[in-house]
Length: 138
Image 1 (cartoon, rainbow, N blue to C red):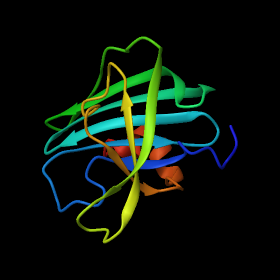
Image 2: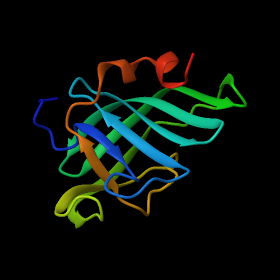
Image 3: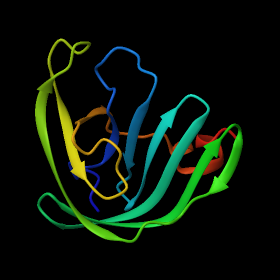
Image 4: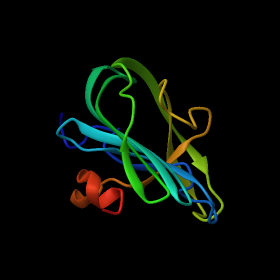
């Protein structure tokens, strides 16, 4: 996958909005690895996946790890099946941006907020986020 692929980056439902009690974040790295995490106080659900571009606005997501945190305990979750998903990226206004920002809409069976856009937080997700122990607070 080339570095300039439009999907590469860290995308958040709450990007460009004021603080919230929950968020869903996608990370896509250019090497074809990514994750989606739904986080709220005291609990987190995370699915790590490999991604492949099939065509414009179509990706194959192949989950390889499912973990969740509940009251401080890290547990293994049920692994969803691989699936081909569609997405689109549009420019939208977000209150804290003062300008439009790229917003991704991606629907997959394991996405919580598929009907809400995930705003682009950064094109370069931190390498530390690849480590599930770091993400899950281990």
